[in-house]
Length: 78
Image (cartoon, rainbow, N blue to C red; front, side, top):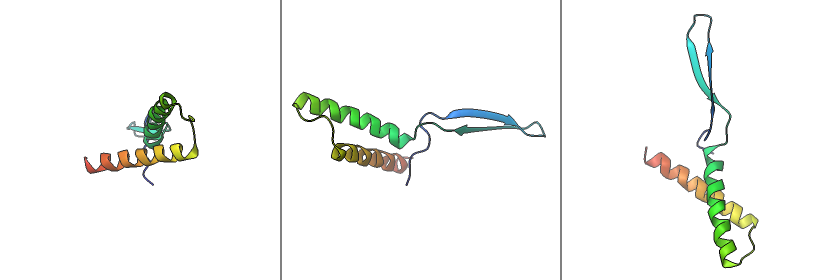
């Protein structure tokens, strides 16, 4: 499954024995989780204004489906 990589990676740099810098990223929340977090934030706000129950597993699943679609579109547009 494509998680989009890290949304907020920590950038690290190390020198090898030849003095060459190797820069790489590690950790961080996945872009998929970041997208889903924003989707659920909007969904819960909408439900709250409609007077609905503010949470269910169906809503959470739907937010990850939105996140997956966002990652898919992102790949197409590259």
